[in-house]
Length: 457
Ligand code: FAD
Ligand code: NDP
Image 1 (tube, rainbow, N blue to C red):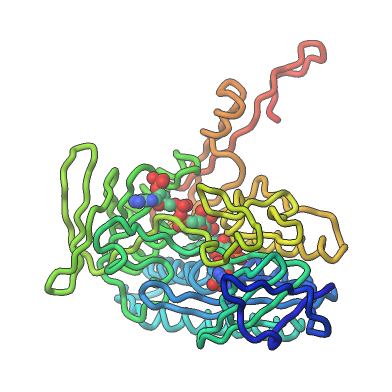
Image 2: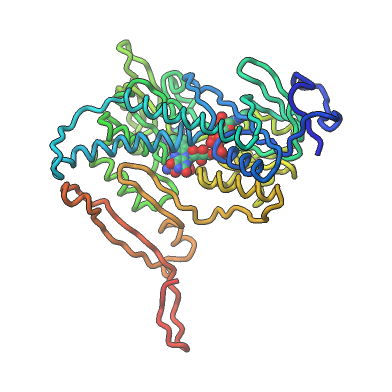
């Protein structure tokens, strides 16, 4: 293995310089360099270090356009699963306070205090940032807080917040740089006045009356907890909610949200955002079906219209790593290998992978085990279960009914439906009309010779 790191040479080569990482002897060597200290990167680095490899992780958070920044741990820890789940829990507690008198607790509903919740959530996230740093130290993984880009296929240049440059190289490099929320930059005022999930969880003050644009996981989860915390919340859907999910189930999710007070504007797309003299945001939108324009005023506009992979600043072309021309995600094979045999990509930045933390973690661990010769197992991305943390949580695994029918034909798919009433809904007299279970099975034709009737597979 031949690697160089740190002080020699001190600065990153300019675009025209040629510097071979393999020409410098006697320098500190790393077996594995991981770019990105999020779910996948940290899991991969820790596993490889535990298996005896010399590992470095570089992680750097580019502040959001609104200036929000955070620590080590990536999207899930700082601006994803963790703060989302805690704010979802805060909203669910509001429902429990309303249920409490039925159970004998003489509680009066009180207004929710955003500042208290946000401070508690943010403190917990900061403790996780610290925990990740300690774990890296314990496992002897070297951590660099630098923004990395490729110099060539074996060498990476990192720049710190203060502008200090560091060169690192390794025999194996794992790219786990995740993604960031997308802004609709074509919409006037979108970047200037809107925020994204990168900002929402770090707001010190309540966002107030909020327009959430988008209709998938992030949009519906955020709108769900904002409504649950007592905020006037509207979701603007341009097409259908939860594309790719079973559409009957996704209707139940949005019906329940509407019953809890979330407003929905369907088939609409925003065309501009303007700040009014009183500080409120006036949003203009179009309804293509009627061809009409409409406006509304909000305190906050939250863009939740998808995410962009963090490949733009990596200089992947210098390493020869190929990306998808449509998604800009890194093309990988089943072994997570990119177009360059010693460079790998895992998690949200890799093409065709679910954008979920458990799959990024598992992919990272398995990759480390293969690189250390401990296993030949590859990640199985089929049938990954997922939950949408809307006020009525929706969990699913496998194909939606629509996909099952498309793949196997209507005559072969048998669908079972059932309503259920959670026990805790009964005493509190909650409406359970959206509590629903749906399972489909593949119907096999009977075998006349053996006397087997048609049955489910
Ligand atoms: P990330 O966790 O995004 O980590 C990438 C890291 O690399 C970041 O720290 C980034 O700053 C850093 N980086 C980027 N470029 C560079 C560079 N050039 N140099 C150095 N460092 C760099 N998933 C679930 O499974 N369950 C959930 O409930 C859930 N909720 C979510 C809620 C929200 C609001 C969002 C946005 C996402 C949620 N997700 C959830 C998805 C989950 O967060 C991601 O799938 C997961 O974090 C991806 O991990 P990753 O390692 O690929 O990337
Ligand atoms: P998605 O890419 O899943 O969805 C984007 C949404 O925005 C769609 O509803 C899309 O509508 C809409 N949209 C896109 N462009 C526009 C536009 N210009 N104007 C209006 N609407 C637009 O993104 P998310 O950010 O919601 O989620 C990203 C990923 O993060 C998810 O796929 C998931 O894997 C992960 N995640 C997981 C969670 C969990 O596990 N609980 C929670 C949150 C995120 P259309 O359908 O019309 O294209």
